[in-house]
Every structure is written in C-alpha cells, then in structure tokens.
Image (cartoon, rainbow, N blue to C red; front, side, top):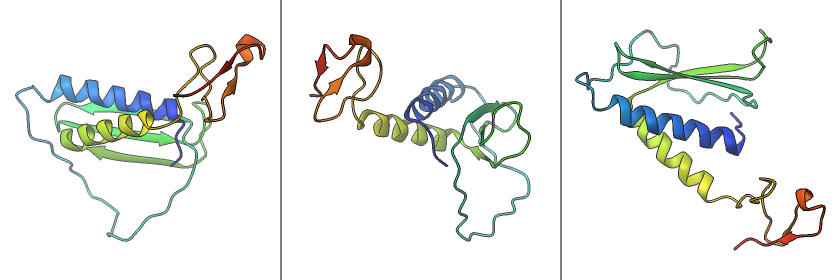
Length: 133
C-alpha cells in the first residue's frame, strides 16, 4: 500500500494521540476477534491509498484501519483493513514518525521537498533558492 508522506505523518499523529488517550483506560486488554481468512502465506496487494479511515473499538480496545484506493464516492477499487492492538499502534506510530523525519525537509514557503542540490521555490517565483541542511 502506497501512502503519501503527509498521509503517513497524519496517520502516525492520530495513532499516537489515540494510544495516549486510550492506553490509560481501565480496559487494558486488546482483543482481536473474529475469523481470519489469512493462512500465513505472503499476501501481495499493491495500490495507492487515497482514503484512510481509523476507528477505535472501545469494547475490544483495538484500532481498526481501513485504506481505500478510491475516493468516498467510488465503490469499486482495492481496499485493505486490519486491526491493531495498542502496542502495535504505538509501534506503527513511532516507526512512521521516524520514516517521515528521515525524508527530505519541506520548504517553509511552499511545502515541497528540498533536494540536496537545492530547491527553486515556486512561491518565490524562482527568486529564492533554498538549500537543505
């Protein structure tokens, strides 16, 4: 599943906030229930996620993440859903933030990534060349 850097960052922020909020409640048991169709073999699904949905199930103390290839109006397209326990959610949040922080820094004017060779900012009409570092 392909995500834009901003999507991954927002997912990590939402999961991190959810972990802080829900891990202190009296229900500390995370239970992923229901039948699974996965038999342990590798599953290959490749698509660009355009819509993410994150829900928290208070009864089971788990997060449910859904990723859809299409927009809200589109019914067809690839989709993936999974359940995440609180420790899994915490780990995913931390790893996602680490991945986002290790990328190219964004330009403070336009938000586009700054390459090592520099960045000609469109908001400055090419009159300012930003450098990373």
